[in-house]
Length: 241
Image (tube, rainbow, N blue to C red; front, top):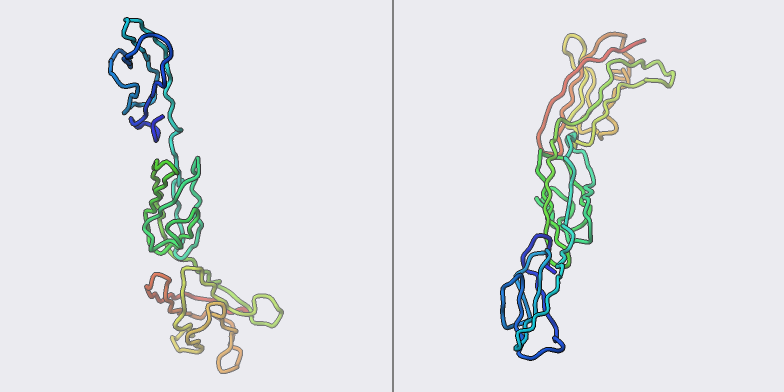
């Protein structure tokens, strides 16, 4: 049979004819030759014939089959938040070797299920090959949007155990924080954290250990993203009694 689906490299060999008078000639779809091997064939139905020296002819039909088409699918891609991490799970219809690209955005380039970190919008390519050397390709586009970050707009530091601190929750797209600052309504700096841990970006409503009064306060957070970019975020929070 052909090596791969759709190829024209199959062959048919007529082995050791019995009876008749040698020498023999051989025909494939009416094309006569002296050798019993027909090459460079596509899959399909063929008519074979053996002709002996006495002019006798034996004809028979033969179906040359082929392997199933090697198929691979990566889906339609996805829209991801900056820094989001996903496992790629291709669908293939038989055992294959994998070659992923671009390798620099993946955890491995020759494994079945690499990890992709969403740093920039990227076309991911996959080439697969089976034991016979048949190949197939697939592509998926991953669109990378903004990072995720949640900042509430109200808190009540009244020691009731609920919502006592103003806490900002950076998503996976944020690599680090340079500073976190709180200002009063006149722009005076009343609280600051330098290089806070990402799980500790918070304010308890105090300045110099004194609980401040209810009102509106401004905040600023300087962050570095996983793609190296820096941003300064600002907002407003209401301190409730």
